[in-house]
Every structure is written in structure tokens, then in C-alpha cells.
Amino acid sequence: MHAFSYARPTSAAEAVEMFSRAGEGARFIAGGTTLYDLMKLDIEQPRHLIDVAAIQQLDGIDTAGDVLRFQALARMSAVATDEVVLRDYPVLAESLSKAASQQLRNMATIGGNLLQRTRCLYFRNGANGFYPCNRREPGSGCGAMGGLDRGQAVLGTSGFCTAVSPGDLPVALVALDARVDVIGRTGMRTMPIEDLYRLPGATPHLEFNLAPGEMITAIVVPKTAAGRASTYHKIRDRESYAFALASAAVALEMRGGRVERARIALGGVATRPWRAAAAEAELAGKTLTPELALKAGRAAFAEAVPGHHNAFKIELGARTVADAITIAASRSI
Amino acid sequence: MADDDAIHGRGMHEDGATGFSRRDTLKAGAAVTAAAVLAAQGSGIGVAQQAGGAALPGATDTLLLQTTINGEFLTLQIDPRTSLLDLLRERLTLTGAKKGCDHGQCGACTVHLDGKRVASCLTMAAKADGRTVLTIEGLSPGDALHPMQQAFIDHDALQCGYCTPGQIMAAVACVQEGNATSKERIREYMSGNICRCGAYVGIVAAIQDAAVRMERS
Image 1: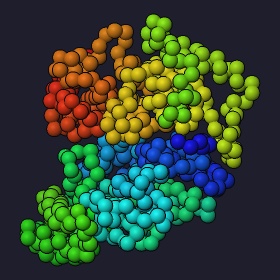
Image 2: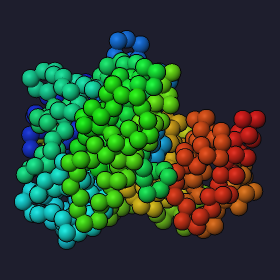
Image 3: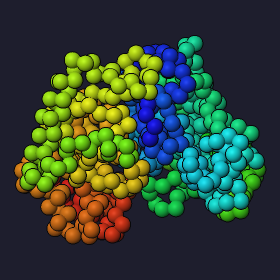
Image 4: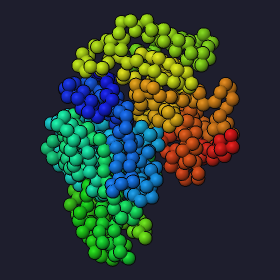
């Protein structure tokens, strides 16, 4: 691991100020479960680490008001076990409790979790590895194309990158139209969580729409009656502690057996947390049946482009969406 | 992490050969490092050794760490690259926590930080500043076994034993969190701890057993 300077700001404003002073090679670190891991692999080589995790009063969870407000340094385990989240927003609680292990959920912050980097085998092969990676080293090529692409994305890919967006929480937040508060040199701003994530296009190394030195301070989720009729359904190679092969966040507003409005987002299959508008439209205003749920699932993958070894994700993904719709509907009162 | 080992290994390894217990070693190590820190404070050690040319006021290339490990308050000068696991094993000779994958995937390095289980390999030692660390060595006083340790013996919950300290620290936390309420829930909340010998049946039985005993005590 390369040497770096280490600083511990006492406020978000000071963190931003430190970052702009440090210049090239500065990085914020919170829980460190992604960044420190990648530093051990030499994939991340920060010269200045600004440890924001000890900033006081930036880990609050407020579920009493008109919105759910999670400050960025709230630990994944804390949000996953919040009483209101557990009772009224199972899609959020499940997206957190089905991610990582309890050890990592005690370390990782929800702000940092939004910025988790891909688990693509070729990306993680290392800075001195045999395989090229446009995300790790722009312009070097993509080892996954023509390689072992079983885990790669089928939605949102480009000729430069097919790496899957690894997160679970971001998928649930996209389904719920969450917003992200950000602080930077020019002050605070807020944006829809979908806008945080970029498609790889020709520049897969640019993953997030954050300016250098901008830091996430909070996640804000609008309260919705659809919260209770919701689920995060995650299909993995093993039953627990693995990244998604396919996952679906579904929240439904039902009247009797009829779907008034559906919110659906996909994980494990796309290059960013993926809103499935076509699947939502398939359900809207219709009486829910198993056939309709599967039709919606298939609609979610209408634009999918498989590689050599990952075509199974299209059928698996469609059935994951269908099952998630059924589970969510069963929770409707 | 070879660099870290070289930096942090100095002067501590040979203690094991002198017949000291681990706790004696820890105490001796703390005394030595505390003395070194006191000697260095006159030279402004807090911001010393700016080899990388740190541009930030308050940023350091070496770090003064104050932490409580198994009840001992320690002051240590560390390289900020150091993981909590390497600090425990290589510098303090607390070798209970094991290095399996070194990437947070196997759970062998599990310790408690402020009462919560964490993967010490992915925890920068710097993050233990002002906080409390509990390792398997500090789980129970003296030679007495913690109910979870006894239950692992009673239920044959290991073969080679390499993952066992991490399993036990995770299992104690699992009970304390209230997640040891059924076999299924134990399996889910212990899934971050891999046992390559496949002693899972015994591990789950041990946790169920110890959960009852822990509640009684």
C-alpha cells in the first residue's frame, strides 16, 4: 500500500475545505469497507485520506417527520434495524440486511454504500494485473468482454464496460424516489438518487455525478403508503452473504387486487441501479395475477443485451421481478 | 502488507519466547510504546515524519493512537496504513484474531469495536482511536472460559480451529444483538464467518446452547 497523509475533520464543512486544500489524490474515507479494501489491492492509491467517519452528529436517523431522513454516516446495521424502517419500509430494511455481513454492516455507512465500486473480477484483478479494465485504467480495454462474463450486466452496458453496479440499498432507494443531499465547495445541493449514477458509455471510470470534494451528507426518502407493500428480493449463488445475480426492489400501491401504482428497480443485472419503468407501466391499473407479474418481469428485460455466459440473467431477472411483485402484493393490507 | 509488518513488528515478537503470557506481553508492549511516545513528544511527533509532504494542516503521516484493548489503555504511534488486525497481531502479539482473506470476506479476523462486531482486517487501526476493542483474548477473565467458548468445545464446533476465534467473537455478538433466536436466523447472521472444515452444524448448536447460558448469567 502506498503512503498517504491522514486527517480527521470535525465537520462536513471542514472535510470539504480539507479536500480542496489537499488537491490531487485526496479521498474521503468513511467506513472504509470499499476504499481500504481497494487500497490493499493497489487499485485505489489515495495520497491524502480525509476520514469523515468521526464527524459528530452526522449519523442521525429521523423517521418521525414527513420524510425518512438518514444522515450519511448512519451505519447500515443501524438503518436496517430502525423500527419504522422495519415496519413501514421492508424494501429498505431488506436491501440492507441482505447486503454484506453483520460485521461489514456495523462498519459501512449508508452514504459510503451509495459509492461502492464494482465487484467485476477484471476490475478487481489489480492495478498490476494481467487483464485490462477501462474502469480501472481508462483506454486499456475490457477483460470481461470475451472473458468470463457470467456476472456481468445485461442492461446499460456499453462497448467499453459491462461491470455491474454492486449495491443493494441504492436499488431500493431508486424505487422509492429518494434524494441525496451533497455538500461541496459551493455549498449544499440535493439531487434525485438516480442522477448520482452514470452509465458507463465511453467513460466508465466516471461512475458518479459528484464533483471532486463533494460529499454526501444525507439520504432523504419520501414517505409513501407503498412502503409496507414492498420487498427487496435478492437471488444469489448462495443463500446469504453474496452479491446479487439478480435482485428487484418492488413497492406497490394496491386497491383490492388492483395495482394503482408500482415502483420497480433492478440490481445485479445493470451497470447502475436500474429503474424498470416498462415493468411499472405493465402493472399500472391492472388486476394482479401471476401471469401479469411475469409479463412485467419480462418487460423489465426487453432491452437486455447478454454476453457469452450471462444470458441466464434475463430469465432469472424476469422471474425475480415477478416473485418480488407477488411478495410485495402479499404485504398489501 | 509486508511494509506494515516491517514497521510494526519491531521489538515485540521476541517476547513470546521469554515465557511471558500474552497479557504480560501486551502490558509490556504498552509500557514500551508509551515511553517511546513520551520521549518523542518533545519533538512534535504528532505531525512528524512528513515524508509524503502532507499539505493539510492537522494531517499526519504517522498517527498517535489512543485506544483501549481488552481493558488496557494504550498509546501507540502507528503508520496510518495499518489495519487493526495487523496492529493486534504483529505489534501487540494478540494473535487470536486470524488473518484469513484480509479482505473482509471470511470473518476470521472478527473483533468487537465499541461492543459491535467488525472485520478487523478492513478496519484501519486509526479508527480505533478513542474507542474500545475486545478480542478473543479478553473475552473472559483469567483462565475461565466464556459460555460461548465452552459451548464450542461441548458441541465439537470446529476441526482445524483457524476460524474459531472469529466465529466465537461473531457468535457472542450475534447473541447480544438478539439474532440467535432460531437456527435459520443464526445461520443468516453468522454467514459472514466461513468455516472451510464445514463445522457449521456444531457451530449453530453451540450458539443456541450458549445463548441460553449467556442469558442466565
